[in-house]
Length: 203
Image 1 (cartoon, rainbow, N blue to C red):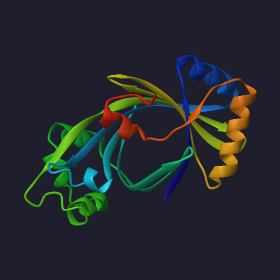
Image 2 (cartoon, rainbow, N blue to C red; image 1 turned 135 degrees about the horizontal axis):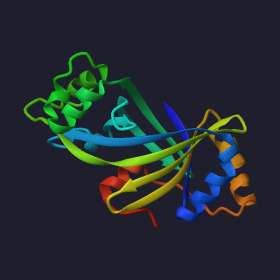
Image 3 (cartoon, helix red, strand yellow; image 1 turned 90 degrees about the vertical axis):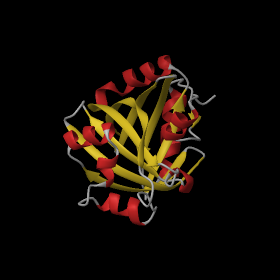
């Protein structure tokens, strides 16, 4: 189970201000490209499952993930997540020809997709497209913070995330820090994938 605190920032100015405040704690910046797949008959999305290939720094690294049973409330997200490293060249081939992903027998995730969700039984896999994300990672107050600038083709979303074992106390710590520094925020109430599907930024 992945548990994260997710706080949405209203605009680029707030994102820049927070980036400046956190700059002494900067660890790395990741350039991510997220590409999503579903069964031709929506076998995954109809059961609130998300199949994703994530490419890092163009093609330097790739990760295949399956997320299921998501729940988000008051800025705390909980979701079952299964991840596997994936060959970037094969990943690109799967984006171009999604049937190749279904044919990867060595993947435990794809075994679940075929067995648990029934993708491939008379229907194939389709690529839904995706979005790019610039993620700045910071080591702050014993937490790993991720400041995201997510670029959809219909706008840009800004969000602060923190994977947490104590989400309520960590959320309070982040809220105090943001409020002290005059940075407006709201609790995130939808995932990036949901924003992508709706093709509309949160209000």
